[in-house]
Length: 184
Ligand SMILES: Cc1cc2nc3c(=O)[nH]c(=O)nc-3n(C[C@H](O)[C@H](O)[C@H](O)COP(=O)(O)O)c2cc1C
Image (spheres, helix red, strand yellow):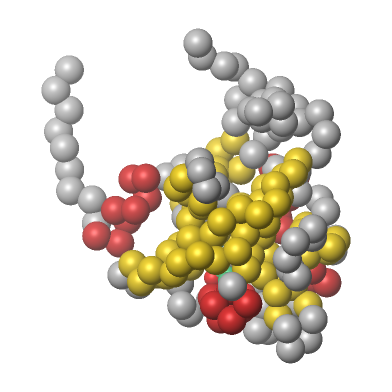
């Protein structure tokens, strides 16, 4: 059936690329020895060997300064149970509030970097920044993954989607999640 194609407003063009897997990035502030959390929908795997991933962060974010300064960050994978915390960390700035304190998320020591992992998340990718590229109004931080681990029983080379419901941002306050129906 013929469907009319209508133009999409410039501001919403990137939303045509959603839903996007949404993650919580932790980064370290050496001045107070505390970690901050920023919600990120624009992240992507980039290379198998070496394992590289990218996160696109606006220079307006407090987290941008911390990641630039320390050259490290952690990708923490949340599930739908953490939707409120994900929105909080994506609406409030670490320059005004301690997001670990306000959300009651639990900081735990990471294995190789100074930032904390978020205990309630199901997987963690500790990264060292190997490159940072200005991409329009964002900065693409390319991180080499130097440690990666997940909760036992949830990931065996792929996530067990019967047990794990990850968050995928559609836009505004809307998310979708993974389904246990797997198409072959
Ligand atoms: C679902 C969601 C996804 C977001 N994705 C990104 C992103 O990919 N890059 C970015 O720079 N900001 C993103 N943001 C906005 C930041 O999370 C937000 O500005 C946050 O308050 C910045 O925190 P900070 O100032 O402590 O770094 C997102 C927000 C939400 C709610």
